[in-house]
View 1: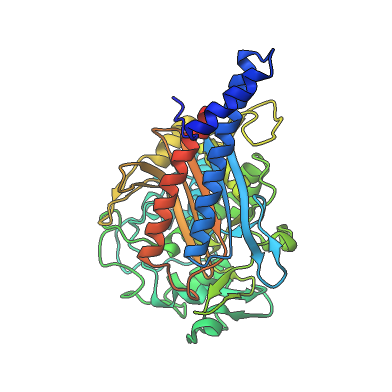
View 2: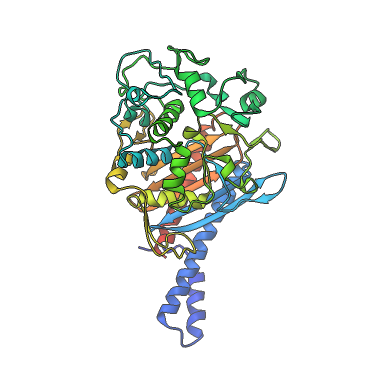
Length: 438
């Protein structure tokens, strides 16, 4: 049912002007009324986003809304770089942080469909013939891939996890972002390629290895502990079983399939001029950060655009299939499937409930807003960047919201920051419901 929010006087004026023209059919009046509602709703969306940018001193934001199995709004706001003055668009590539994790989940389910691995596989067995990463568990309990993807693997992120952020080439000249921003004491000689970093952390010969600090003293599958290292290991297991990196696997089976042209784990695959530069607020002004990378990139190193991630979200919300003509201005005649419905059910079905009140499936989170709206997806953050990717299965609406300004260095965003953004998400999804009816 349409939620008619257009002011009554404006609506009456519109009808009067149409009927005065003579010869206007009822369908034309209906189309004009729908356009006015659509214009009103999109103006309300723009106003709400601009208000948030001002409140949180954000630099740039890109938002896409989905409803009724299609994208109903996609726009950029603010700047992608304060020094160049480049504007954000719905196709600007942002650092997505932990919104990378739902993509890892989909790739793993695709690999399971292809018979490359199974969530029920033992991690030790999957690594048995791998000469890149050694897993030195301080216990004899079985560790399953299923444990890694619902954060019950018993692997902890260390206090030194910030050392995983770096600037430069992973195999050549580089420096630690954490050392430059927060004056930490990260060892610049530690490898920052995925296998090298995981081995430094998980192998008893690694420089970051600690049986006490890196692992919980519990049986895997029994205790929730959010783990970026565990997710990175899950992504690496796909590589060890498929013979190709997660980045290449996802490119072939997700990004190319869905025509996600501005999304990649590989910085070299993206147009540098189209990247949103991360920015941090120093108390007086927004300051750009260098374009950085992450050693544990499956857990948080994906870059993508609002338009691209809306396609991805649509496909999952629609049972694994991106509907035809689902994007704004699209003339795509056929639907595209990236996962079977049974795999999507496994992906999204909660396996673990956390003390914070949200549930975990295969790297997909289910949570409830204070208004009672239930969302499925993930949020993310990084130095000078944040992201939200969620859909509301009951009302068939969803949102992608990504930004490149706020925060302090590598620290997480405050509870207040998240609360304001979730309030806005709830509000924008209400507008999406109306836009989906028009």
